[in-house]
Image (cartoon, rainbow, N blue to C red):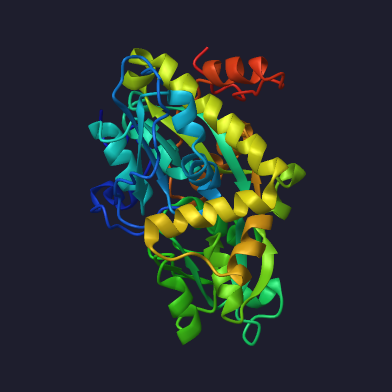
Length: 370
């Protein structure tokens, strides 16, 4: 396929992101290097699912991946998979998780919309499917109140986003364009300067004054508030019903075809985890934090954890229409060639699980496999 084919998702400068090493800048969350996490016990007498010894699940050490954090910590995945061992892996970047999925190092993953779109389109629709939703919201523009007191004050300032072309980077560039400001998407220079900064180091950069604010996911946003920042804008206020996809569930297409029972078991566990999270917010918050501590060796403090958790909605609905809109924003920003996203969703198994649970089916917004 020629380099200028419309199905090539990113322009050449952004496409180079896929060559980043595993410790690349975080694509949509606060995380650590991918690693195994052997904390779950298999129930006595349990049977294997689809004859598999294990199912490898990838996610970020990020509160917007709370379904996975809680699902691992409380044993939802292991319960549904029986004697098939859950093998979690923690990632720090979307490109590295997509690389792991493509190589077969993981089977199923929790990931943001931009890397999912990128992975699907760059493989000509052959690498992955989005099979479920996980979370909405949890993204804020936090600023230094001594330098920025209103939205118009953002002009001329230095604003951090996690990575060139990532979900929050696209959102901020789109918002800036709607203010009438011009910004070069590749360099980040213009009426406002976009500083691509790893979420792990953004709080230090903010504290040192090298950036004036940041458009970032949780818990990074609340970390900045703990450093004296002020929430100037919650991204959810820009979306209909205040809902937009921040985390989806993806699967290798080959794994979906070969092991549908295992995929269904993971989706059932995800639905059960989300139901438990929404019914038990305080316990769920503690469980997610405990899993973060297991992954990184350090739990979040209450002044960061509490406001961060409140801003995230956990949902089985992949909010497909908002993914389509996010792709349109990237095209508008000049980071994305018009993609063909038809077939990116396969919600068959999710809707089967939801029906069995007495819940309403979810819609692929015209981007499903059928």
